[in-house]
Length: 250
Image 1 (cartoon, rainbow, N blue to C red):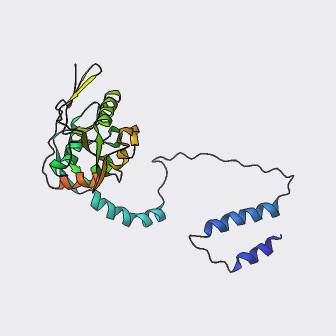
Image 2: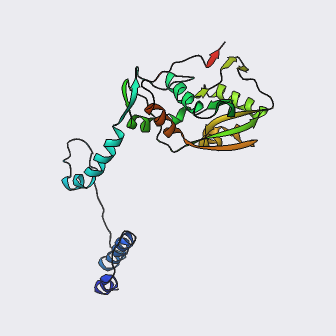
Image 3: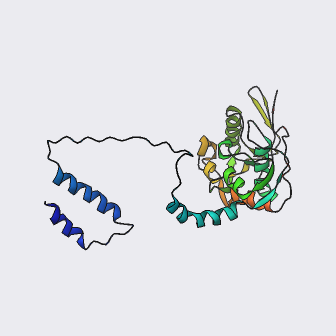
């Protein structure tokens, strides 16, 4: 098909965000058909461009995103509270992971859960010494995960204890564990089931926490973990946390 014939197809075609890609690919196809025979070889070459500070900024692009950046920074740079020390995660426990689990634990009525269990991998950053901003909390917990309360049988709870032993610990609150060889003891007083406050991601088997399957009950709290931390920091002056041997070994 001649190129001018194809041009007529697009003459009255109004480009939009939904069809511009279509135009591009069809145009490329037309060009290929018209400009090259099936036996002609096409050579393609390219080079990589390193992205570093030596590259000049694009003033036009900057003008486009600058107002949005200014608006976002005005929110992210808000100082929420103060941390007297640098906080980072470590296993089996850390002051940071204890603090996150504790804040989640106090966000729900005390009688509704037995303990809180989160995951080590869900903590994506550290907290600096000094002023804690909204940005710090978003970096710490960038996901949209919500807290749920999952009730599981004692047999599943024993699987959870074995999981914590084999994985060398995850953030917990409301419970203390002792490991003596293969024997695992805990500080809870339980009957036939245990109610665990956790994230919806873990409750659905994330991080291989399959012991949440076949649960007795599953209750949503409609509380996002990141929002809980933000709200908590807004209402305190200084973060207070420490390690208290939630995991002990003999």
